[in-house]
Length: 329
Image 1 (cartoon, rainbow, N blue to C red):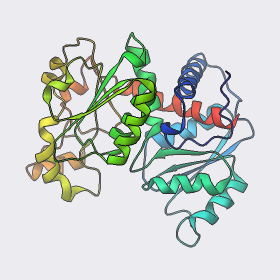
Image 2 (tube, rainbow, N blue to C red; image 1 turned 90 degrees about the horizontal axis):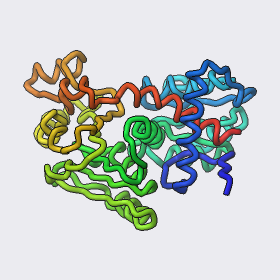
Image 3 (cartoon, one colour; image 1 turned 90 degrees about the vertical axis):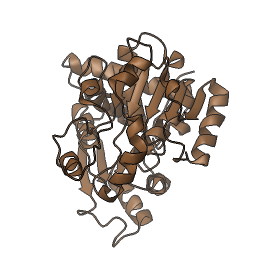
Image 4 (cartoon, helix red, strand yellow; image 1 turned 135 degrees about the vertical axis):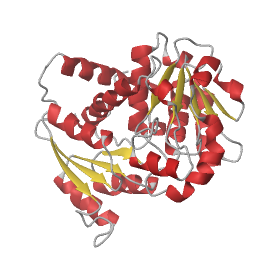
């Protein structure tokens, strides 16, 4: 049966069937090939989109702006300092106004409820560029990267997320694997409890697709992994949490020893970026000066043949372009 996603919002992969997610991925591969061939696109000609950013970004902002430009649309960027959203104007009123101006709205920020309310009130497709609970566009890019580097179907792949298993990337992967019939392992300390509602939703989807979801602190869980994944332990503004995060998460740092423990010579390492893999950032240097190594992955792994993080970063553009095209055209 043909897939038609026009007019749909992209808030979480839990809103889509495996067939619809497959459509996004196939379209992303197609649009990437089109760009590589130098074909000028016009699929979004005459469309206007707005990008609402309460959190800063490099990859997400560039991907949405270039996705629009590549296919003939115009993008307007608004951050929290340059709009009245939620300050002098309610979120509901702002959504209704923006829905009159624009064909689609992207939001990157904090509460999942914000992106849900934008979709509820705007009357146009809304795309989740990241919230505290989910990061669905990243998962599409990650799966796309897997398909480029792993010679077997997604449903036969095992993804191990290491570190802070309560963060949005862990949850987004949990949802993605559950929907696509994959094996997902959240590998982190027992002290960090996965949100019971997130786990319940993932397990319900997994029951339908044959996926396997595991939460564990057992180091042997990486055996047979096709993907080792991690994320930073502390963001800007969370400096006060660094001592506790380092204490809890250092045993789950991605090292070459962990890579070798998978027993898979072709295992790939992925990361949503930015990454603390060396001490060339101000935050990593400051933490080290205070006696804390905040690297979630060693430089050896990050720069190794296993690492596909820059292919993955590029694929943010193509997968986001697929989301925008599929929901607007």
